[in-house]
Image (cartoon, rainbow, N blue to C red; front, side, top):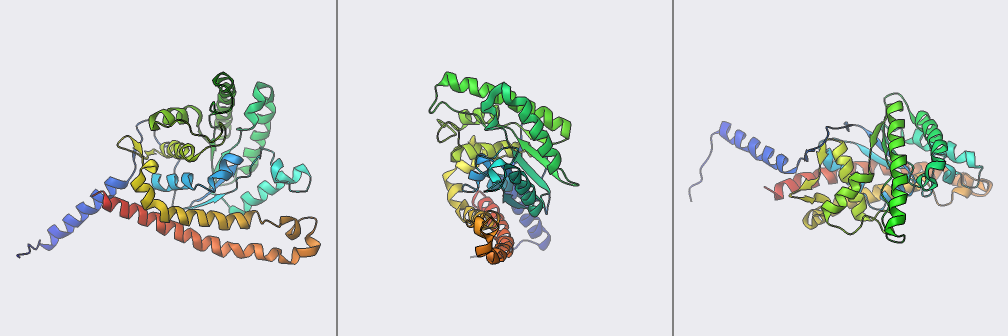
Length: 332
């Protein structure tokens, strides 16, 4: 069999073309709607801050995966500071101390993670108070955003997610979603005043639910299921000027991609678990609380998670880089 050898110059050009073809098959297409509202940069430390919606992302890893796919050439880290039932006063974070301690605890861990990009999401619970609770909520949210601001830090604020008629009637849910629209619009105005990037989730997620052809994006009408987090990821990708839609289907719902992405998801979830134990040790009361006189000497072990998390960051980046490269190759 005769093997045809290309001249060196033509070989290089061919290899370059194949590499570009692989990347164009992978790189997210430009969004058809608005240009990017914000961007991710090499070395960014992205921190997610909020209540149940944010904390539950810890067990999915879908939002982080979406960010990585939307910015495939960017090297960054992600930390999750979500806390179920939290509000803009940080009240759920107080442990056994006074309510005000929760706010201090919130600020402490934001400081610990030193975010360059802070993705904040509050208002999901507050919106149930309707118009009567809006003024107080906005005042407290305004203070929080000011306290979170720092030199060189970009703050991205996510609006409330939509409710669905799973337990309550469609009429009741429509009324509640109108309150969420009121809060969403008000948060947008607040962000304009404080020079924060605002990402609306309400209608965009409802539109994506129809485009995805799924019955619902929540488990119980409130808390998001996996498809709900996929929808959030797509909205965020579009806010970055990209889209994860391929041939009319969201990439993260593609069964072949889901199989290929399992190693990357595994690394993301293990990193999330390691940081969770650094952030919220199960025996907090004994280590740093009112019973620290019994076991407080062991609090030093909390810091031993730091190198483990940092090492896992590298594993996450490698796994997602491999996913992007290998998935592109399979689509040649």
